[in-house]
Image (cartoon, rainbow, N blue to C red):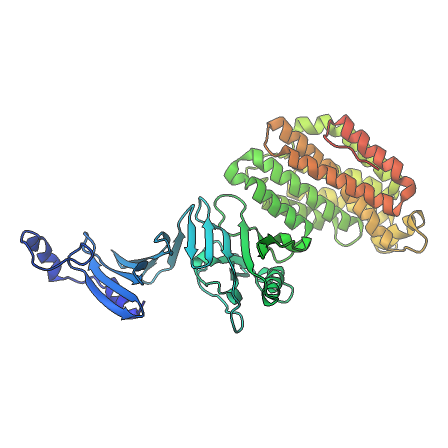
Length: 504
């Protein structure tokens, strides 16, 4: 509580009273015990706060603080210039231990599998002592602005992270460890912050006279990572769950919510990282992120936004971030790839020849082959960059004399709509990326089935989504090609025994 008391605990000079303690124990004492213990000094600090000073059996000094008869905190010297502080909730449960060593960092440890109750605030921790929920019931609005938080930074905070509230300061949320998370700066604050949007919505409902509960749930990827991967806010109004806008139901803890970043974080949350839960779950994480990264980066390459080498670097980086190549093993098996090779190539060719300029159609086949070789572990990231770069050069050659997007637009613009111009390049890029992504996720699904990996269905759903999105893109922009493209995807799914079909 005050600095003098803390310093007293850290001081461990020679005390003659300790030398006499054993001697005294041999004699009866007329001194009355304090709470059943001798040698305890009681200090009334006013306003219902009392402090009890004493020593442990090991001779280390301690101070316990009681508010209105309830234990709220204990400070204890551990020796070797270490001080441990323990915080207790309203039920008397120890929920936070803080160990400070003179001249060194402070370590914080939340109790595992614990419900922390402090007034109308509740926090829940998981088996690893990570907060999975912070909640305030019947919130009240605090006067004044937001209070920033700068303490409680731990080793798992990333560069650019801030210490963000679970229950916000404007609802009376504390800045304690039980209510703070490592949050990307863009997530934690600013006018564009989705978390701030949810907080302001809850405040507005309260100002309108409603009884409002506010909860922030946290998701994690893997068992050792104490930094949340995403947040799921919940608002209850007059006892009923409030329907949040779709974009605010899940908020990813990343500076920029790209399709690939979402895929990476979703894979980590659902299956952990490969280093922690094994190769089988790595198949899911790698297959998902490699497919999604291929969609984004091959599309951007076709559209002339990035080079083939840049696309390859991003695909490798995204896939590695998901933990899929942590063991240096393939996440699409050679057996599966060889079995599906003919069907996959036929899908790529049929869709390409139906909707894409010749150079783009060739790039789709070549890039898919390179990505699959990478996924099989037959080539490394550098070789993938070489392969995609070489294929991208052929695309640029096929549309020589201008930007790739503009030339693609000129070639296929009339097939889409007169005067659509360079927008056609974006459509073609989406089709190219979608068909490659479908092949990658389908082969990863078949590998997951081969390995008996739990979660294979998740990859099948992603393959189906990519296929349907690609068909929908054709339907909206090249309706005369719809039957050919849908038929190509359905034939591919049937020949590879995939659990889906594309309905027109």
